[in-house]
Image (tube, rainbow, N blue to C red; front, side, top):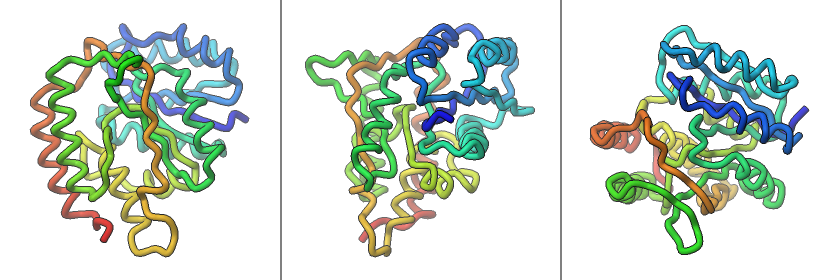
Length: 249
């Protein structure tokens, strides 16, 4: 049984899904499996996924949702099902592979090497020597969102919205048990839930159990479902998160 299961939420990804990349990665990494969630797609995504799963030699599975529920619920449902197979780590990844799959074992290695960590998340830091290809507008809006998010969470986190995250199974079971309030920034709500779990406890604070991994490569693919107006919707969700979850003292 692979130690890591990655959930891939898919909505109308038939033209963008790189089946060959997923199969090539599985052939090179026996420690990882994939669970693809078809979030009520209206194109040929379901057929593409069925074909991919059939060619994955038992290392990939598929969950088909009857109607489109949004990324937050698709990921949550996928995580819950992935946990049933007993992996050590479970996470989620964007279907367009803007974050390369070779980062998955690097995240897992961080959790292996540091037992206190519960969550590893990708960070799109534009440093010299890194290939972070992101539009100027989305980079600017992302930095504004990150500043607002850090203020609300009371935690200096650089990049909450990168679609590459990995958790210990027990942590994921607690964080993804209940539906999310937020449709647009559920990634922030995941971190808020983790902070809430650690607030008031005698153990380590949330800042010591989350690791941001600076990515070497990331690409902003065309066809993303995120639009500029979604940042305005995210501000509304951020306000709801602030009211719902306690901040560390």
